[in-house]
Image (cartoon, rainbow, N blue to C red; front, top):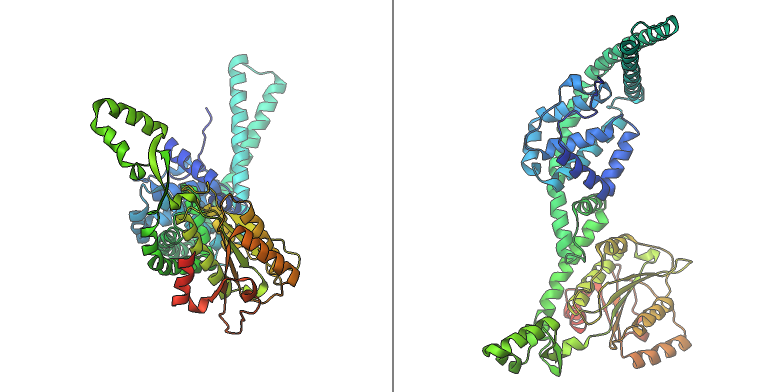
Length: 510
């Protein structure tokens, strides 16, 4: 009977394996780790599952060494050092039975192990080749053993084999003996190599566990800050999505800075608009039908007091046919279109401020149930890039997908500056809406001429569609000029005044 050895070193059940497989299918980061590691070390996918099990499972048990592959011996030595390090139990206080944190620790620890393998302190290229050699030799020996089982079955069936078959069997026995001797030699050499790297491995594991523990705590804080700043963007995140977002935030300092900036600007915006929102929706403009209890007219509510009419009230409530007030807010407002300068001069702090203002305005649009578009522009061959919200105009649910927000946050075309093209695109987006009274917010640090004929046509369309243009100058160097902005804008402010009355005025106007 075939003696099947496991590539894993830690016991796992079908639930553990299914959960890990699901995480692997959901998370790009986890798949990238496994793919990268599998190019360096044999059975690296089994090592990542072992790491996950070691962090997640309540009871962690090592498989008997005789039941595991020798091609996974380096992984076993690493796991053994993890298991006996004092930092491991401290980390497990956060990860046990916590799928997300366990996966986060697996990715973080796995990447640090890979960094060590590639470093001068790691096994080295020659040693890694030997790990692959022993894995291959082990597979070959097992294949010969399987073949010998077949020969034994033939012998039992046939009794005494003829001379040709007997010689073939003996040749295979001799081949197996040689293969097992070769494998044993490779295993002894492997033990010696692992013993020599013991100190460096111990040092790496201790450092990695400490770093992973700190990274998990920091990642949680960054995720909370992101969700708070971005207003829990449309769509619930699965564990895989959270893993990839946490990794993006950890690796990308720009995203972390943007998250903190948006949070600060939103606080400013919220304090400015709180009273405005509390007064919204008080003007009655019509009577319509629906099932919004807060807007049901008093005569409908009287029906609830009558036994016979109560059933009819419930029926019309389910069908959305109750008479209710139509408030001014329900009429809907036109879209908010942000024109965002992506030219080379915006790189750095200016880009952060411009996108911070942009994403803060997204929160206003969501609360006002307005469609929201962002047109990123530059010049020199880079086409306009349009991001848009999803939902239905006039109804709750407008917002941007988190993937769109991340793409917007990271997208930066560079190039020169052109004003006419993005403003023309913004107008076309306003024209496609069934609501008038939209707004264009133009965010830039630069100057660009607009032609007289274009400006005349723009003003005519502006009167027709009844939209306004608000411009925000990113004046961090104090050399920027309002110049052309004043020609087509109803109001111009600057980021240097974002904590002043002027900035509060912008948030209130929109």
